[in-house]
Image (cartoon, rainbow, N blue to C red):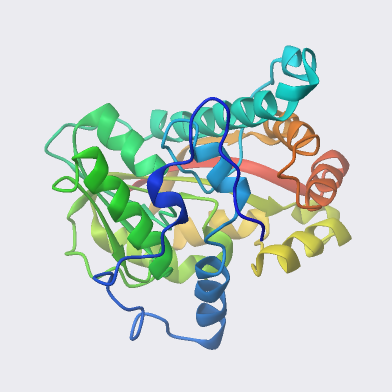
Length: 306
């Protein structure tokens, strides 16, 4: 990938171009299968991915998910020399809005609670959770690079005593049973078996704890993966699940959904805007096709452990 270019509204964060520090724990022993090794390598090799770095460089919040909400059409107007910077800023606003919606569904969180960000990427949502609630947050990822980047961010923010990132497998986090008030996944469940994942979340959550998921899933009603969904799988080295499998796996592991929100219509504007940007990768058309034809849904699911 090409190196990122700083936005005119703020230089790319200092950690953005640095590799994971030498002290970052090794993924050896964490990766169980050849597929997990391939996924870890995919994310370790995206150190200069401008989709994440250009957007995160605006305010130092680096996300690994998409956005929701209508974009401001005025960003497509105005001087040509600031056209792309306006789009990048608006995309970042939409992806941060998505994280805010996820955090809105965690329920009542106190500063003494402990939270788990499963598949934490470069740490953006974890930092937002700590800022909002003042609680301890642990993030886990099988990417050594992502963990090193996120821990650098925590140190620079002065919150490394409360927000920590670990090279661990979300299917076997190693955290003590009943230790978490809430767990979330933000576009990460398509890399793992849902029954095994929710079994681990049920173990680490306290009774009555909350799990929140935002994910893309294919529509069972349309009869399997569409061509567009298959292209998304191939692009991200993932295995998108059918919508129904989330609810089967949640029920099998003692989770009761309290909110299910279809965000599909709300995420389409983000993809339309991204298609106009300099960070477009070519995957925008399959996303828009899948969403518009109804073969792919973007869901928020909030469920309580009973």
